[in-house]
Image (cartoon, rainbow, N blue to C red; front, side, top):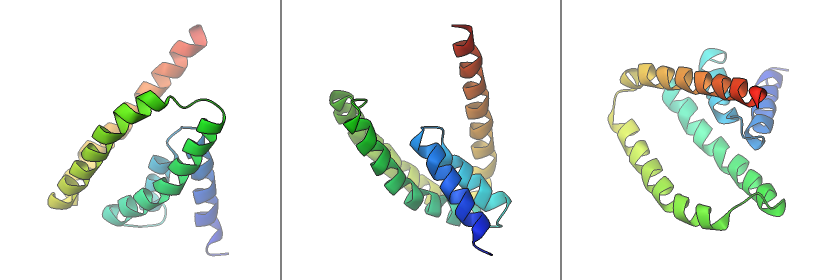
Length: 123
């Protein structure tokens, strides 16, 4: 019973990730706000969580013809470099310094998503 709520959070955020909604970010928030996991550990778990979710999403998108191989070939190398650079920076900076920028990023992402939804309803 103790693992039921974390399991449900993981399943729900996994489903949202597959739909492209950002379930990993929601998982990060669940772990830090509701389960008391410190931010650096939650980010590490989130990265491990992302790999199978991304791979399965990539597979299904490819099977359904939604994957542009040329765009993937151009985007993957700089994405990997930036991910490695971001990981290095995050390990060299005190996590308390990262909390406010991360919170601002989440607010910006939420506002952007809401604005996109409002715009697409008008079309």
